[in-house]
Image (cartoon, rainbow, N blue to C red; front, side, top):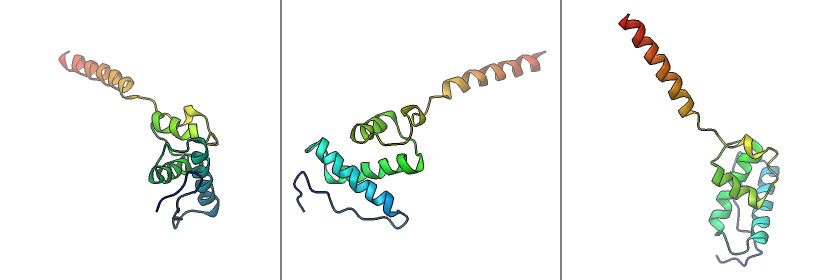
Length: 110
């Protein structure tokens, strides 16, 4: 099925999806097609609409790259960018673990 750039692809409503979320996804796809007429495939738009609804209604977190792509289409996400970008805390924790490990080995040597 080929769509012209103003048509919205057939969007299947998920069982657990409210009418508000479903209609929001349809509006997201329509907006994306108006803003970026030939940039995304229909399957990409459907996928991005689900990501948009997860961010908007469930507060899900995604990588900054995905978040910024979604935000370029629709800024209506209820929260700020910082709310969705997870910080890399591994480096901070590894320093603490090293200092605890070294203290423990020093105490066992004494």
